[in-house]
Image: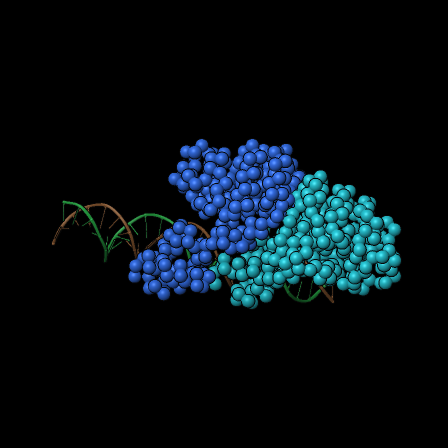
Amino acid sequence: MLTSHRKQAILAALKREGQVVAKTLSEAFEVSEDTIRRDLRELAAEGLLQRVHGGALPSSPAAGDFVQRQQISPNAKSAIARKAASLISPGQVVIFDGGTTCVQLARHLPATLQATVVTHSPSVAVALVDHPGIEVVMIGGRLFKHSIVNVGAAAIEAIGHIRADTYFMGVTGVHPTEGLSTGDLEEAYVKRALAARAAEVVVLASAEKLNAASPYVIAPANAAATLIVDGDTPEAVTDPFAALGMVILRA
Amino acid sequence: MLTSHRKQAILAALKREGQVVAKTLSEAFEVSEDTIRRDLRELAAEGLLQRVHGGALPSSPAAGDFVQRQQISPNAKSAIARKAASLISPGQVVIFDGGTTCVQLARHLPATLQATVVTHSPSVAVALVDHPGIEVVMIGGRLFKHSIVNVGAAAIEAIGHIRADTYFMGVTGVHPTEGLSTGDLEEAYVKRALAARAAEVVVLASAEKLNAASPYVIAPANAAATLIVDGDTPEAVTDPFAALGMVILRA
DNA sequence: CGATAACGTGCAATATCGTGCAAAGTCAAT
DNA sequence: ATTGACTTTGCACGATATTGCACGTTATCG
């Protein structure tokens, strides 16, 4: 087997399965683990994948602390993302926020779904490249690296030209009286602008966001019609939101 | 057996099986491996296949998807990217095109460089997330997934508000008389708009781009002041560009 | 903290590569 | 028919790439 062919196959497997294991690959290709390790090392040097102990992961759709945040309660986020994806009907125009949960959302879209996704997050845009049915519209602006989203006047201006069915919002805090909040002023402005241009706002809130409040307020909690939470969230936690007229969806 | 017959048969086998092995071919055609190697070398020079250690793979420089394209001559692209990175001075405002070479360029920027990067490629934006000194401005628009760049009227409009020092352009063809060209009409418009807003245009051209022409022309070759090519590019290939007044940099 | 798996590195065996060169074949002009 | 330029092919030889193994180190997990 050709070396470069093997490397291509590794990348294909990685793309298909989201991760590869060195030992498994060595058995599949009938070469020593040393060779696989060398391949992985070289592919990592070219930036085509991310090397980890025992195997490799796809080349960071994001980087640095963003990747670390992606590992916080991944199952819950993944479940919430799947639930959110099920709300999208063919032909709709939807807005995806930035943040780890929305990247998951992008990944969990059905492969065949025909729809338009508007986003100000390069990570989300890149995640949607493999979805042939999805038309992607990017909002430009100054890149706020911490969240990997575009912000600023250019973003606000571009958002004004959009009208969407649903906005899937990610936040750092959802609180019955303090409302929806986030950690950056610019981001708050952008989220507010996006919310204003969507017929319906859906908030994706993993457990640690509930009843938390961050410095910059986006809107009252019930500016969002729907709140998607993890499946095992106690009713006591969600009742105050239901009392505000919000629909609570459990993933 | 005629040489050209054999070459055609090699190409047919390559197309049929996705890869060819030098040793196998030499046995099949009952010629020495040297002869096969010569054939493969010549076919590779014509761009009809991609030579790899032990045999050859299909060339499809533009055909394959983004991930596959990233594997084409990674060392050369990496070298070209490093050379390009060295042209950027602190404090400058530079434009990065989309494409695999420019993603490499983003990765190879010195970690400490202070500068502003304007780009219409989400991939480039994401690649720059861990460069704390780099301010990133994204041009929004409709995502053209094949190249992972934003295009369309929104992109053109946003570009009009920018003025940059240098535009690092990636192309699919650089030809002395046919000019700079690319495979998509929308992309060509965007590249032209970007070129118009930069004081200097630098073209990054890995070997397979030189003397190639694609359907959509961006501008005459000497609209770019500088051409960065791989280090071992023969002078005979670059002379026509030098004759047009372009500065040739070897990586 | 210890066991185990995974890792990186150096090394040697092998395979493959590129180049120079000579032998054989081709072909047109003499 | 002969000559001479040219191409094709195989071989020799040194250079380079790939691979598996040995050995010491590091990461992971209970």
